[in-house]
Length: 323
Image 1: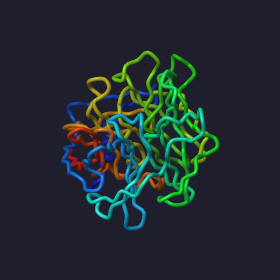
Image 2: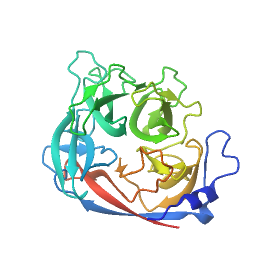
Image 3: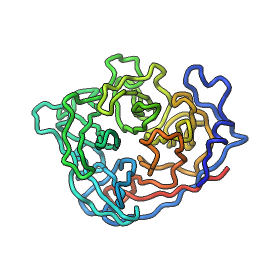
């Protein structure tokens, strides 16, 4: 698939170095069309809900994904499982990767969900969201990391968890919750995009933030320009040439939803494509995500939540890009 970097750069606003903004050029936008495929091994199953799949990585001849698995539709009674595939369609569920904490009163004692993966320093860093058992606590959503020498585990929680917690400042966009991590390596550093919501705001007012670290295990420091995108439910980003691409779903201002965004600096984004629909809490295959090579291109496929008769499952989507 050809790179869209030239198109993205042509659409960047001249003042993109000012405060983060999302600018649309509706007269000159490309399009992205979706098609979907049911999967074996992690599809619909009675009594089991699979949701919130990670981005896809390839290790040797196998694709890997991680996801939330539990008995209910929400992620609030789940653990993190994983599956492998040779072709991205027929999957084998391998088992649990990260369970609920067994430490009484732990921040991730009630549920662990919405995982994503970072490959760095010859290790695998599994990011996940956790909540405590006290459901009366608001806010109660934090992000931690488990690390392993192998994508098959075993996984060890970092002692400095959680690596990102909701902001203590009630006025910040992420004072209520943080969730849905997505990682890239850029300029030798670890760029951690996530979604956040302010106390008192609705789910439809969720926005995207950025934290950056010198090491994969942190400490992660919030970007001073947060929030970098004024919307989005699912966080899907990738290296796009020398910049960063992002896929926006159905949450946010009208001119933002169902779009592809591009940012040369990873902070100030501009609309480049309109999408026919959106990925539902999806992750994509991004072979250049952790190479810091400035050669990444827009993703051509990924995985997302699919709807079963009663509970949720995971399905594949493929993307067709056009100018």
